[in-house]
Length: 109
Image (cartoon, rainbow, N blue to C red; front, side, top):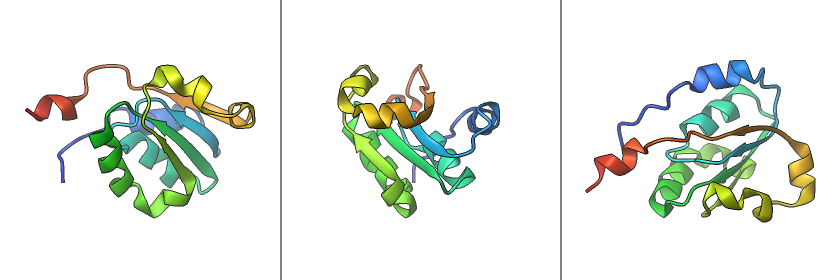
C-alpha cells in the first residue's frame, strides 16, 4: 500500500458542514478526501475525476466498499461540467479540488 496522507480532509468535512448529498471530487488522487466524505455520511454520492489512470485504479481499490456510491471519470477536472448531467449538477452540494503537486506522482519514477 502506498504511504499517502490526505491533507485537510477533516477540515473539509467540517468546513462544508457535510450532511450528505452529491460531492464532486475534481482531483481524486488516492481517494483520501472522498473516503472521508463517504465515511462521514451514508447519503454521500461521489463523482470523482482524475487524469491519472493509475490514481483511479488505486482509488477504486481503496473505495471498493463504497463502490455503489462512487462514479469514476478518467478526465481532467476541466471536463467536469461536460461529463455530468444537469440533474447531477443541480444536486451537487459540494465541490473539492486539491490543486497542487501530486506526491504520489513524485514518488514514482
